[in-house]
Each structure stands twice: as structure tokens, then as C-alpha cells.
Amino acid sequence: MAVQREWLDRDFYSDLGVASDASASDIKKAYRKLAAQLHPDRNPGDSAAEERFKKVSEANSVLSDAEKRKEYDEARALMASGRFRGDGAGGFGGGGYTTTGGAGGFDLGDLFGGAGGGAGMGGFDFGDIFGGGGRSRSRTRQQQPQRPRRGNDLETETTLAFRDAVKGNTISLRVTSPSPCTTCHGSGAKPGTSPRTCTSCNGTGFLQRDQGHFGFAEPDPECQGTGTKIDEPCADCSGSGVQVRPRTINVKIPVGVEDGQRIRLTGQGEAGRRGAPSGDLYVTVHITPDRLFTRSGHDLKLQLPVSISELVLGTTVSVPTLDGSVGVKIPPNTADGRTLRLKGRGVPKRAGGVGDLLVTVKVAVPPKLDDSAVEAMKAYAAAEQAAGFDPRAGWGR
Ligand SMILES: [Zn+2]
Ligand SMILES: [Zn+2]
Image (cartoon, rainbow, N blue to C red):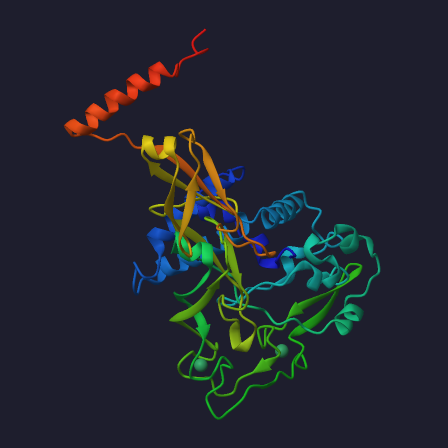
């Protein structure tokens, strides 16, 4: 995960209307509110709302991810401090690169070389970027193949029933977003024709420029960094290869998913321009409560109503589980509030094994008894006293 070049042009905090020191929950709240207001399904045909919706989603995809947010903050601080410049020349901001449509960004590793791949999840390494001195950009460029600009990541939400979340399920999700054009299959070229290699950059998508003591590659304006040219653009997408349209995506919900968890669907985000790879789709899962069960990690919990006589005399009660009912034996003289553990009747674990079902007994007192029951109860109370049972023995002092 490296910082993307275009992140630095953006103020994600103001996109979400939050302060730069906002807490994770403030960010989540602000995003939810804006996303609900601006959702394309609520604002059909309103391109301003759609644009805002995209910005808000992008801002959230960075700020809601602690790792990405940290990198974004660090890169911005560095920009502000002026260190992010090559030898006092035009520097980083002067590259003349503008994003086109929904295309995704470069990462700094790509622009400056060196950091590329090796940085992995750790983000970019400034030592690598600035320490290299005479590192030649063009040398690195030839080692690394051009990375086409991928589409942006998308955020969406879904709500699952409690039992579907526990057992896992496949759901259909409807998303309206930039998607590969169905007419030209994303190439941007009119059907029957195909894009040709751009002669200005020989298909690399970049032009070399030497600046200060490190070389600098900037996207070729001739082909907007794609490396290809289209003579006859597809009429349905004006040559972009991308159309905003609703799509239905089947999402496999993993077993045991938890409320608030995000599922990443690789390549299901916004389509890249002209066949460049799509971004990813992040689905935040909300779970509706169940009538009977609650959850604590991999254990399920259940409250079981019982009568006083059942607790005193003991009995076997039929108890629902996620896989049908089972008979649960309540031993004689069980205390109210005691929890019985049913092994392996809880939530499946991804690593293997299953949690338990915790059944807590709770006395239900009859609202009304008929005469014979009242008589029997009185006889019982007398017998209890005669046996010397004092529920408050040792209590209260
Ligand atoms: Zn098309
Ligand atoms: Zn070109």
C-alpha cells in the first residue's frame, strides 16, 4: 500500500467535512451521513451529487483505514514542509500530471523508482526516495514495466441477517459505478477496431524529463499515460472504455463475519480507463440482531426461560441452535442465572473449529396460578421451612 500521487492533491478531510484530527468514529459518522445523502440511487441524473459521492467515497477509503490515513497524513506533512521537492526545481507539484476521469493514481514508488514493490505494505520509504542521489529514473523505468492506472476503489455497505452472517452466505449486491463499457469491453475503441501503440511514447505511457539530480517520468499527454491511441472511439463511452451503470455483484460472505467488518473484493471497484485494471470494492457489513441469539466472539448466547420447579427438580429442555434443536439437561438444584455450555454449537471459526453455545437459565414466575397450584405452593413453602432452607442465610450482614 503506497501513497498515491493524486492523494496529495486532495483534502480528504474537507471532503468529509471533518477536522484533520477527527476520531475514527467521527469519520465514520460523517461518511455515513454524506454517503446516504449523495447516493446515486437517491439522486438519479444528478451528476454533481454523483461527483461528490465519488469524492466522499474516496476520502473515506483512505481516512477509514488507519494505515492509509497515517501514510496520507505523513505525505501531506512532508509536502507542507517543502521537503517533497526535487532539488528546488519544479519539484513534485510541477509534473503537469492531471488525472483523467476516474483513473487511479500512481504510487510514489512508481514515480521515483527504487521503492517499488519492495516497500510492500509498509508504504514508501523516504530514505529510498531521497537518498539515492544520482539514481537514474530512466534506468529504473526500464526495469519496471509500466503500471497502468487502475480505477479507484469503491466503498459500499450491506446489511445481513444475524444467522446469514454466522453461517456465511452469498448475496447479490447492486452497485452503480464506473464499469467497463459493454460495447467495447473496456478498450475504448469502436467495435471491430483496436487501439494502436502510441508513437509519441512508444507505448510506455511516459515521457522522460531530467530535472535536478534525478530523472523524472511524466505521463505522456498525447495518450494520457495509457500508451495507446484510439483512432475510432467507441460511441457508447466516448473512447474512455468506462460507463457508469448499475451492476450486480455476487459477494461471498465469509463464515462468522462480524458487524462493522469490511470485505475487500479485488477488481470490483471502478473500472480503469481503456481497459486498465479496476480498483477494489470494499463492502462494510452491518448485521441485524437476532430474536434469540447474541454473539460474543465465536460463542453464541441464549437466554432460556425455565420455571422454578424445573430448576429445583431438574429436567431436559429442547433448545434451538443454528442447526435445529437439541435436548439440554438441566440438573436438579440448578441456580437461576447459571450458564450451561453446549460445545461446538456456536460460530464457525475461519481457522477451523466452532465456538460454543452458552445457555443461561432464567426463572419465569407464573403470572397467575389456579387454586390447586396455590395450595401446592403453600404446602411446598411449609416443607421448605421445615427443612430449614433460608434463602437469606448469611446474607445482609
Ligand atoms: Zn465503449
Ligand atoms: Zn503516449
